Length: 371
Image (cartoon, rainbow, N blue to C red; front, side):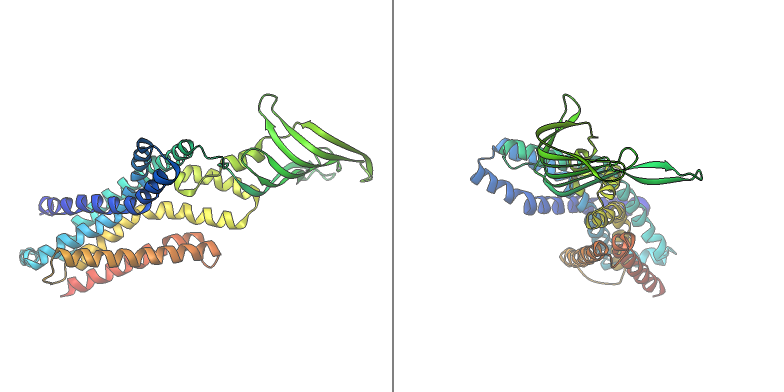
């Protein structure tokens, strides 16, 4: 029975992967690439390369959809042709019949996790880089505002206790991809407030491992916090850490990072202190973990809906799959947005759709088993 059900499930699953991934990449990527070919002169060979690089991301999204389609279509056909009734007549319970679909859904979950971690993020990033190089855009790749980087040091008090105090504060209004603009650096690396540097712009000098500051002023401050001197400069080199530049350079779209890279980026964002970015990244990390498990949820829901007594064809199964998928992703985006807004925790915002549909699947399966 397991071999038979597996054989029946594999065909619709492969069909779903091909159909859903092709449809998704066509809607999202092909039209945009064609526009760039016509308007921006993008070479066709580069467009094909970008198209292929974007495909893994849509395969990841197609896996859960295909699992739902395969289980719903297969069990609906078996039900309409009374094969499930025959199995139950032989003493096979509904739970045992559905177990095959759930096990296969777990296998697809592992496949989805591997694709979503090892293949899709790297391919998405490579597609972005390839497209930008081909278009030779003058627009800087990296642009951020309000770059904020604090450094701390431990201070030993008179009673021997240790206190974490601010050592240096680096702030820039914006980063245009080449230079930092509108900088203010408060330096407290030694006891007391030593200096304040205000500069129009600055860039990292990789040859000397220093920062080149341009058109600024250095305010030297005495230990008693009185101004000691004011120095104006057109060009000044300061030995400060490169970390503020790392803060903006390592910023990628969440779809271009795996979980490990996202966690590293989260630590950097926490240093920056932008709560909106932090919440968004926290939700995205949880969604990266929850997405593969949608396969198990959809497998259970599809099998439970398919085992009901019915006389529906493949067209009906496909239509029901589309409705279920649309409903799931609608809840997925809404709960994710509420997680980013702080209404839900990042964990609840990412996992709520899974919990809801898992409950629906279990309820449907229990009702079918009682008949």
